[in-house]
Length: 332
Ligand SMILES: [Zn+2]
Image 1 (tube, rainbow, N blue to C red):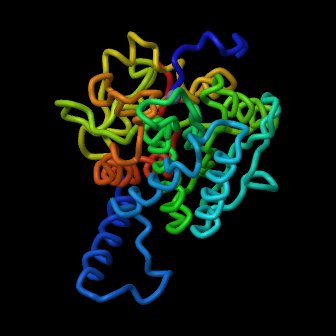
Image 2 (cartoon, rainbow, N blue to C red):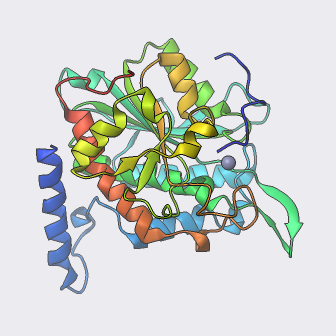
C-alpha cells in the first residue's frame, strides 16, 4: 500500500468448488496417516500454513533486501514466483513471464501468468488476480536493522496470488481465463499495475473483474469476517463473494473509506483503464499492525494459519465467479 496518491500521475456454488475442496480435503485427511505422499501429482492444490509460512519467509527474508523496484532483491523474488508458476502449471501470459515496465527508469518487471479457461466461449473473458510484490527496500537503521522486509506489505498478498495460481494451475476448474499478476513499483506510485492495465487495454482484453490482495498477513481485531473490501459500496462484489463463500467472508471497514484505500493500491489503474469492478481485499485495519512501512514488517510477525485460511476460503469464491453463466459482479 502506498502512503498517498500525490506521487501518482493524474491520468488515469459453488457446487463444483465445494466438491473440489471436499475431494482434496478428504485426500489430505487420507494422506495424514501415511508416512509420505507417493508422488508429486497427488499434492493437494489447496494451501496450508506450512506453505504460506515458507513462501512469506523467503519473500520477506533479508536476502531480498526489502524488494525495492529496480534492485536485484526484487528480481530474486520474480525468479522465485516464476519457478512456482512453472511447477504448478501456470503459463506465461505474454511470451515471457516477465513484463518489463515501460514507465520506470531502472529495469523492473511485473510477473504475469495465466490459466486458460476450460469453456470454449467463456475462456475469452478474463479475471485478473493481482498483488504487488515490491516493497520499499532499505530504510533508516533502527536498532541494527535497516531492511524493510515488507512481509505484510505485500509479501502476504503475493502469497495469496501465488497460491490461488497454484490451485487453478493444478485443478484447471475455471471456465473463464485467469491472469495472475504480481506488480512491481506499486510503492513508486502503482507503476507496475498502471503499465499492465494500459498494455492489456491496448490489446482489447475482455476484462470482467480485477481482484487485488494487499496486506492479508494479520487477522483483523474483533471482526466477524476475515477481510474487508475497498470501494465496498461501489459494487456488489462483497455480496457475491459472501454468497459463494457461504458465510460472511468480506465486510466493510470505515477507515478504508475515510483513507480512500480504493485509490491506494493496484486495483486503481484497472478501474481507470477498464471501468470494470476492480477492488482490493485486505485485513490491515489500522489497529492490528504497528509496522506499516517500517523495518519491523517481518515474516515472524505474520500469521501463516490465518493466511492459509483466507486463501482457502477464497478458492470457491474465485472458482464460482470464474464459472458463473453471467457477469454478475457490477458497479452500482
Ligand atoms: Zn506499502
